[in-house]
Image (cartoon, rainbow, N blue to C red; front, side):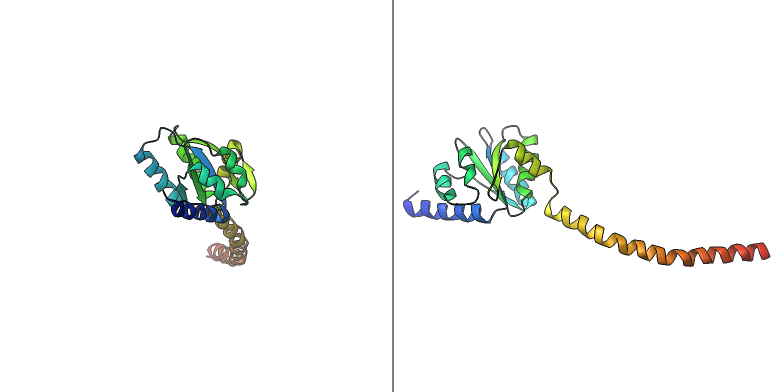
Length: 170
């Protein structure tokens, strides 16, 4: 890898660190190529990405970025999982580490907040952006359906009372 390629990689990593809602650092020592491809596929499904980079170059890219606190985790065979959604990458890595013990979560960062292993697990337990939107829409729609039910209820009550009166009269 020549100097120009290294500079380009540092630039790409810098963009990743700036634009990501969450970055999770994990050790992947002992994982096979197929296991790593499986992790990449699960991250794509979740809306995130996985990147393996030289730790030295990643530390250079972290300089001055909000998530610079993850530099301490960059030693050995590490992989970076990231996503714009602040929960997606943490959730996908957490789920995959349950399936594959070779992937060990070291920590991460959400913006300028440093996360240890417990912090990443706590973020993974939070609802995703889509789940939050669905619950908000459900809360907004619930009063409208209650009003429609309340408006329709008296009419059905009157109809049942009239039918009861007709049966008694007959």
